[in-house]
Length: 415
Length: 160
Image 1 (cartoon, chains in turn green, brown):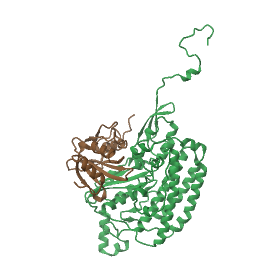
Image 2 (image 1 turned 135 degrees about the vertical axis):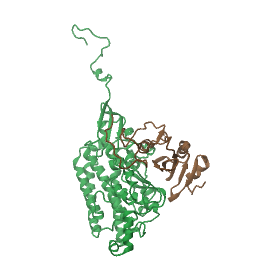
Image 3 (image 1 turned 120 degrees about the vertical axis):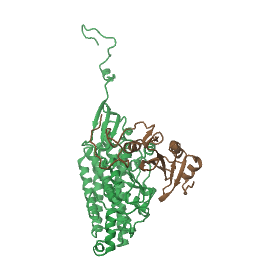
Image 4 (image 1 turned 180 degrees about the vertical axis):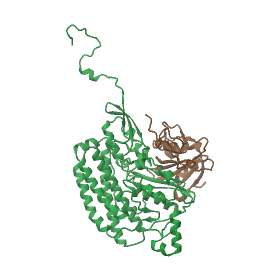
């Protein structure tokens, strides 16, 4: 192409199109996302190195919600750590409650009464549903789908109503005790749960109809944030992420605790290990959890009334009526409140299946009333670690669904 | 040394007898205390020969007043065998350092950073040993037993 009078340069591109093909030597852009970003439900900062819209490098900076969970636990009695465990994963507080109390029970060498175990399973499974609803609902919201989020939250309200009946609180329930639970379920819990479960099922069906085959939702989830089976194991990723990659490991099945070995439920697994598989696994797990709750309720109806706390003077709190009228019980109450149980010296690790994966507690006791070490193995923290690698070469927009379905909960990740 | 019925402990004792210092299975958890100098060999053996393909947890405990002062604790899990084993190694206060497990288990990366952050134990060969939960200017290691719980430090933003 020549322009009248102007000299032509031999190295000039032949056609204008080639201009777009040429390497323009642009510098990578570093984008700060967070720590408080409307599209991430969690306080975390991403330092993203971008080439256009492609992620070249991703540094995940956690710790904004670090509150010194372990330090606090190591300076109180064994009982005083229970409310702190509520605040680890605030979407499913009872799961952390249960894990911690079961680990202490392992050190004490006590077995909780059957009644208590069924109640704990009900509370755990309701929490798991609440957690998955938050994960799936919030993911929809962050992918600009408002309606399914509202369906999810409506179902979660019902779950929280049930938990409120059972525990007296909706979010940080503090329901589980060492050697039992706080109290027996209220009399109207059974009929309410019976009427709520079909409602929750209907809402889950509505949720499913609105979003599962939605073109935009599917396009943003399919083949994004893929992690292979092998990488999951290398990174010790557990929970729905591991199962969506095709490994059917669930602590409830592999090392059954409480009464899970007497319950009939399935473990859904995925194939590809992308966000869409994670979504489908979570949805199916909610249905399975509802099945478990129904079985537990039926079993409790059959069992009739029974003790929900172990009759062991080391951990049992005497009944209030006796405390007010008898010397021995008054002294025991005083000792339980001021000192709590003396836990035998030793170390133990106990893992349960939380909504995010394996939630473990590694406890060390020197035989006193104060723990030497309360380590929480946080699934959120460990599952978040491979995210940088999962998103290398992906588009910036893929970060949102991937982070949503990893479901990092700041309270548990940063402790 | 006794294996307490754990196949993993039996194999460790048989094949790496010089590295294993002590075993126990209190509360049903198979545990081996190993020589910190040989930690990499022990973990490599367990991963490659005994099918412990997942490092589920890595943490440390401060036994203030004892020598060596710290204990680094590894929890391993075999996804095929459904077995667990706990490996511990003692680390002295003066040279709080142990070989990193990142080359063997990718999950060790963040967990070792956390132990470094909160206990000040260094992991030799770690590709990116920086603080993870606290910020760079934080002084001291808060989970050490001699770090007072009441101590306050100015909150400084992260450097970029």
